[in-house]
Image (cartoon, rainbow over all chains, first blue to last red; front, side, top):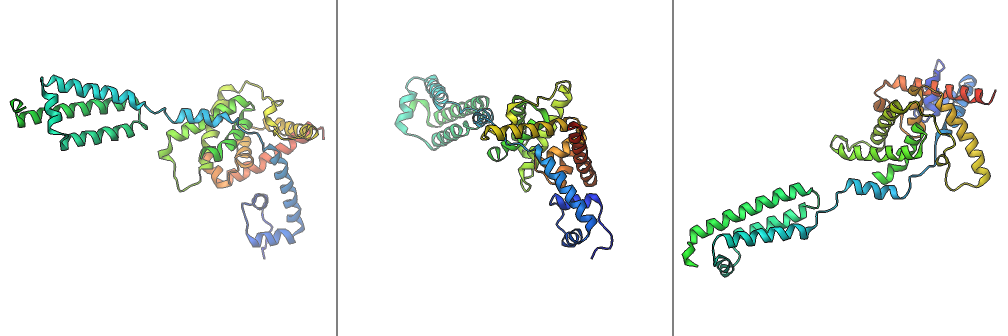
Length: 160
Length: 158
């Protein structure tokens, strides 16, 4: 049994459900003074519960928030078109007849890697902004030019 | 996270500001801030108190910048949507009274009351949100409720 009556704040914690000490609860139930305090404090809690509200957000809130949180995916076609245009342009730039040679030897392992990177970049573009997309694109084109040059140097242009 | 907590955050902001449109903006800002600061969120803890803390900070800033604005007690948004006319009248009476009484309380007591009764935070969570000692939270909650009661009695001429 508790020897002394608990203070107001302890009884309040009991009324709020914050303190669930069984010994305290037993005392409050059996002590007329504490029981009265508990009743008064519970009434205060009920009164302050009048601050609660049933107000709900409008249904379009979620839609508006989603729009702000999730950036619109960068259109894949808009990315793909300049990439292919740049690849085509760089192939033609390397010399006449090079494009034919490219198709004649088939897709090399390096080109496969570029295509993989390109597809990864497209998937990644759903999460990042256009600036990252363009940076990735520039890196791919640079890589592609480097590999094309390397292939040309190894194979020799005149062997086409 | 948004679907679970959005209404509660909105209600908290509504009680702080007394303006539906402003409360909507604050709720939106709360989730945008939360999204930007997801890295700092401890996922082992419930999200509700974290979001309530952000909402309370934003609401406090809003009050600081707009404290000259009177509280709009007639705001229809305080009322639940699915109530009958009589029920609506009674709710409006009591709710308006409680809100008017709340408005008279110093912010330090009002905040603790709102975080407990509207935000449904525990003593410990309120202490963490407001960076206060637990004993101070208990004290402010007790005094806030007493002041609210006295203010209500005063308003009713009791």
